[in-house]
Length: 329
Image: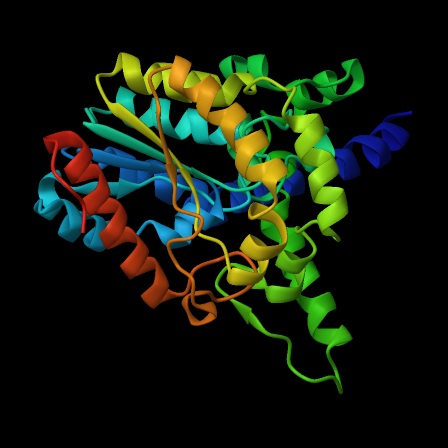
């Protein structure tokens, strides 16, 4: 009997020790993840007067030094970029709240978006909470749950997984597996075009396949309200004393020509957004045509480094002119 117990409990103890050690290893490996670096950046930027929010389009496009140059402010009281790639408006709301909780008192909050992000509901399964979405496990998790839905099964999983780095930050391991898989698949193939955000072909897949489908979505989206986390971003930024600017981000000429020049977007969906945001006291900035040259873009969605500097300088000048009653260059 004693021998059989040892045969059972000794391997079990070994497995538990291994899992605990691996959990600690994952915790250590993820201390400098993108989300945690952004949280640290927020803590170190309490003097910032302009906060940038959004996904990778703003993460790349909102260049702090160029915003400061356009606004004619020094870096100590200039801009802080809290935009995070591959994030939803829920994480973006949490980043704003985190910055406010750690002393940032912005005069302006700038939220960049493209297509239908402001009205498309946020829907998750626990399987989706990987990559930069993992901050939903550890930054105000109960508060964040107000803004996205989980099934009963996923709610139970979420409550268990959020206490273990091994589960919550599992992408710290799986991203290496995916990179290895991609490297193998590229053997003997021409190199894929990519940048710091990822493969260009992946971003092409985020676009609508045809103008007809985009126009149809304009009609549907023009009946939708602002999703709750987007509305909260506007309301909480206003409550903090900031002027709020929602920026329709610059897009490559092909995207503009195929989609944004459609009357269903310009006179339909855009007008719908302007009306809803105006009711909240939010400024709407149509910057979609600001960068008309293909060379200003790195891929089908993101600005190049030089393009981001030009856009940011112009955006900073626009905000300065709006705040002083002047005229932007």
